[in-house]
Image (tube, rainbow, N blue to C red):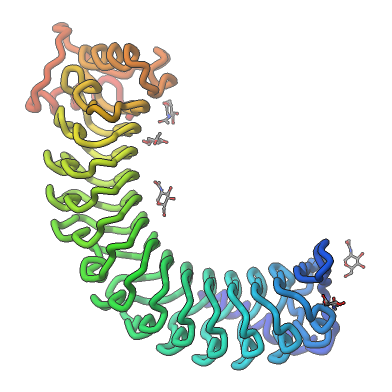
Length: 428
Ligand SMILES: *[C@@H]1O[C@H](CO)[C@@H](O)[C@H](O)[C@H]1NC(C)=O
Ligand SMILES: *[C@@H]1O[C@H](CO)[C@@H](O)[C@H](O)[C@H]1NC(C)=O
Ligand SMILES: *[C@@H]1O[C@H](CO)[C@@H](O)[C@H](O)[C@H]1NC(C)=O
Ligand SMILES: *[C@@H]1O[C@H](CO)[C@@H](O)[C@H](O)[C@H]1NC(C)=O
Ligand SMILES: *[C@@H]1O[C@H](CO)[C@@H](O)[C@H](O)[C@H]1NC(C)=O
């Protein structure tokens, strides 16, 4: 961090020193007759302080799209956009911008899409967007924001998409009032900020969310702001790479439309049997790389549309024979677990009238050989896709005693797991 701040200062000094040098980037009208799309680029590898100036923009007064990504911009003159009243889309991403002066966007009253991602912004003037009430998409991804002031989004009554991922925002600094006017928001991306200690009513003004990204947000538990929010329209929830250890009964109580749930790379060891009760539209679920030992029997009893389930890289020892019977399961990943057996005719058991397994990964488990033989027989018979590379005979994949019988009782598990670990270590 310190290093990055120093870099910024160096850039700053550099910019100040070169402020009057003419811009080292070129802009061209893209193909069309109406001169509406303007693409700019810079081919200078050393210079990082280009200035966006009014005079240069004056050539493009019909522009509706201005693409200034990766133009080595350091400074935007506050009147630079005065000559572009028709602009709808402005891309300033991947530059070296450290500051945007209040009023810079005041001329852009038609603006619908603004991309400021991947710059060096630490904060924005609270009135910066006061005249951009047509803005629909705002991307602030990958900057150095540590705080966003209440009021900054107040005029953005049409905003649908907001991305604040990969900044230095801290949950405890969020004030829910920041969202009070942007009630049209449907996609909200917080990933890669520390969202622990966020207020419980963080999302209380938002009633139209369909996507929430909370990947890598330092969450030590399932966030209360998701339990209390009105998320009846939510379709995608991504909680990948956090430290959540349990899923309570009320976690998804409001989620009637949820379609994709990503809980991979957490520390989940407990999921309440009733926690998925409301998820009647859930189609894709990944619980990959958690600490599950078992799956509660009724967990999938009303996830009727579940199509893909990734339970790989857990510590699961037992899968109940009718666990998925009421779902549309097509693709199941149980690889890298602690299974030594499955019930007889496991795949047929899971079948319901609408659906049948088509893809099933069960490699990297400490299989009993007799059980594996039964399973492979069934899988091949039904033409289900599995990992043929792992089971190509090139490596040991199961263990057996002299007695070649599949023991389908839980209490034999630890014996076979130990036998596997001691006879063929380094496989799993
Ligand atoms: C870089 O851009 C300038 C104009 O901005 C042009 O004159 C020059 O030929 C370009 N150099 C290369 C290597 O493309
Ligand atoms: C802007 O558009 C008008 C009408 O479409 C056209 O006559 C004029 O030449 C354009 N101006 C520029 C700078 O391209
Ligand atoms: C996690 O969720 C996202 C949706 O935000 C999805 O696109 C992605 O494929 C998921 N990752 C894994 C490992 O399933
Ligand atoms: C299943 O999980 C393994 C990790 O154990 C992963 O490598 C693989 O891509 C997954 N396959 C599918 C089809 O989801
Ligand atoms: C299949 O098994 C091979 C060999 O162990 C492994 O390298 C590969 O990642 C596995 N593929 C999947 C999709 O699990």
